Image 1 (tube, rainbow, N blue to C red):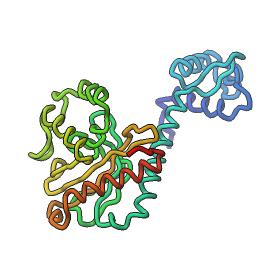
Image 2 (image 1 turned 135 degrees about the horizontal axis):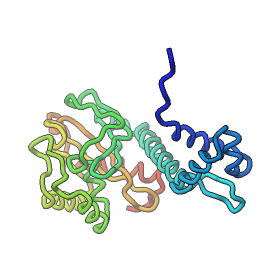
Image 3 (image 1 turned 45 degrees about the vertical axis):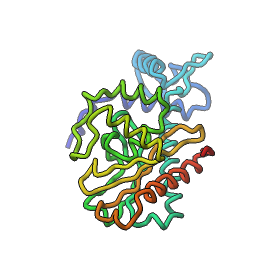
Length: 260
């Protein structure tokens, strides 16, 4: 059976160049890249020029090439997410009082929250969170907790980038539908210290969320504690909010945050 045609040879060549530059004992010249990868010189020069333009490579004073700072940005983002997930699970290992709840860790990306980690409880009313899942931030406790953790200027910029006309339709009748409602909700979160998803994502499901802060005090993620509405009578609502705040503080502390 013949091999399928390679539809993206330039991408494969670019990755091979990155591997070569990383492994080289000294910054390779364009001629070195062409020779070692058996590429036409014009092809090698063209790829190298574009990779420098995109920040994937940098040209040294000796006309050689080294890895660019854009790769460091990507690597730092991956490391940050791994650290968040590791610290989240580390804290959960020492919190048996949270075993009966569904626990989630999310990050804000534009208009959505992305689920980085979750531990599902068997009792959560048919809801099963999974890593990689995305939901509109304004309907989630963790998303609103992160929005409430922004300073005023950053939050205003977020609103400008995501006008109400671009908001998705609420999945339940309880979802936020206007900027006025969102702003009021953010103020309430800042006042009480935690966010509440009162069946905005799914009928019959409640979630209490709080923001995680890094060493600089920036809100970088959110934790959520979810349970069925039918189980709310077993708890004090303020106590559930306090548990979310306490969980977020514990993860934040392990990330280096020493604020209140």
